[in-house]
View (cartoon, helix red, strand yellow):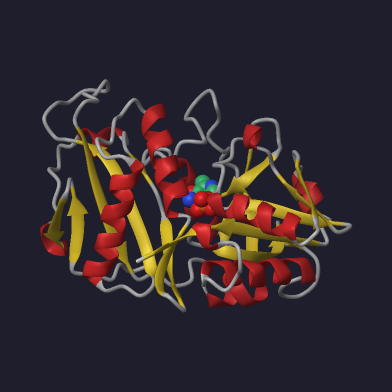
Length: 306
Ligand code: PMP
């Protein structure tokens, strides 16, 4: 997806013009992938632009930084304020926010100096992540030959820049083979997640999603969907799934900030459920769109108004 520049990027407390937001080519984060980031969406609401679960995302940014022994140097409150101010400056009515914690240039080596964390926040317009066709008709997934990063290699629950070579290897292979995305498994053969989204199956009216122990990033959209589904009276179980359980699901869908909620049309060419969006997926999608656009009474605490 092509990036559309906006006016400013927030860097270490200052607003810098988009084209001047530069980092030295010898930053260790570029060489060794030692950095952490977030992906957040802002939506139009009747009360103006609002960011969805901003504090939860920034809390996860802090958690990821902890795993990688970095102190971002700005609290969740300070980063909340910076994000809101960035949206005001860029004038974005809706879009995507990308906070990044990375290491300052100045040392080199596989044990980089960790006391030099820098923070940037960018924002830009971002449409449908998997494309309109996948959103309407469902996405086509293929199980990847690349295993999902594991707890003994690269911790899946931290959103680290370097960890995404794992997702990217799987996604690039899936797209080159003609699929929309990869479905990644754990070494034990459990379903983990897609390259940048969590997975849900619906079977006999019950929602099933892999637990955190199956090498997933604990998605904020996943948590939102679990909460909304339970509010709507659905049973939700966090339990391990095999690929065949997805083959025979009544419905299945992906969740993520960029992807939002996208039905899964097929896994390894086995069609899942019927054509397009199944009834449970559709109901959750509508509930999700209502909540992010500020139309749900009692869920305003998930929105930070700009
Ligand atoms: N898994 C991975 C690997 C991801 O990159 C993402 C996107 N952040 C997700 C799951 C979904 O997480 P969230 O709903 O918090 O965006």
